[in-house]
Image 1 (cartoon, helix red, strand yellow):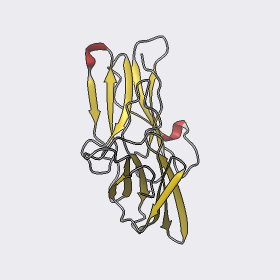
Image 2 (cartoon, helix red, strand yellow):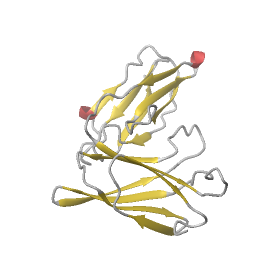
Image 3 (spheres, helix red, strand yellow):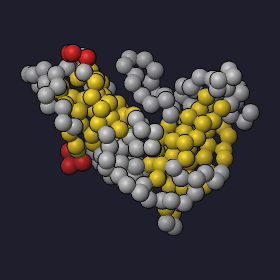
Length: 196
């Protein structure tokens, strides 16, 4: 039986977060996984819904986004309870789109430290003649089947301009960097506060 845990990431790299949701079919052990696309922050209606080909699966317990190929494109992994089946869905939806991927660590050890739970990233980029701001948290949940990516991720759409401002916030402190090249995978290691 699906546990109905929402996963939120930008699967089509348009700059708006999309929803991945495993659902149980009523009066059945059958489950499916749906993706609800967010078109320019308008709606998540059924017109924007895609179903993964999981009709033959029973007892889906989780589904999550993962960047399996480390290419900045979110793929999907689905886990089932019965038989321990793990399925992987490669995302071929987008081409020539840009993204930012960021990871914050506390720098506590020589190997880079641990992920910062609750760190948040905020960036500004220009789209034509207007500016668009994006906010993404890192590790919003660490318990109860929290199968998540350890980094923040957001699409920039076709805006191939430099990211004008990139900010890491944690522990009530923040630091900003600029400019950032699109399709960057950023790792921010701090010692105590982001300003160090």
